[in-house]
Length: 257
Image: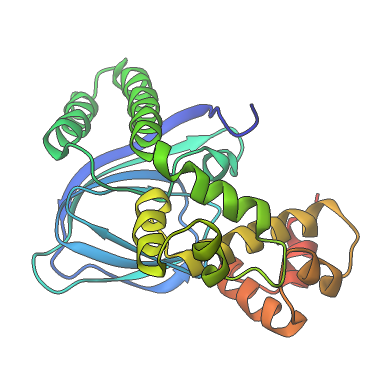
């Protein structure tokens, strides 16, 4: 199935770090794909215009195709193990069915797996990079399995949003009512399933769909905005610039092959 696979071409670097003064004020793309496990502290990210909160025990997916910035949270300094890698196509990792933040996992188990990969990388033998690549495939596969097992009860939530996001009249309140949930229950369950609030997840679906339409169709900006659920072209353009780092028209000119 499209989006279910990923081809890792190279492990760029693996490192462990604690950064008391971590700060990323510049909203920009990162050069590589990334997978991180947080061992301490927390960071509030803005990823493609969506707020993502990452804390100890969480595993974070960072893609090279979505700009981001962030601020550290008060308390313990952010500490993490980072795996940077490259893929054949830049958008493979973004389409890979792993949410931006995976929460609620067995920290000791997953931190041990990340640490084992780090130790292999630090050996710097001729075969280390290849072994690490195999270990990373194992991590990604394990995360998908763990997320699916943990998120079976949340599938209907994400599917409901995916089926209705293009309706301009669709709201989070209507979704909660249709799913027989209170707004607070929907908020909690969707954040566990996706790492995003309901409003952020809804907007993210609309903007991702709009980005694909900008590259694959000749539709006007106004038509695309309406097609993905935005009632106002100007509001859509502002949201899209926050999401992609440039206006819809500029994105189409820059990224269309």
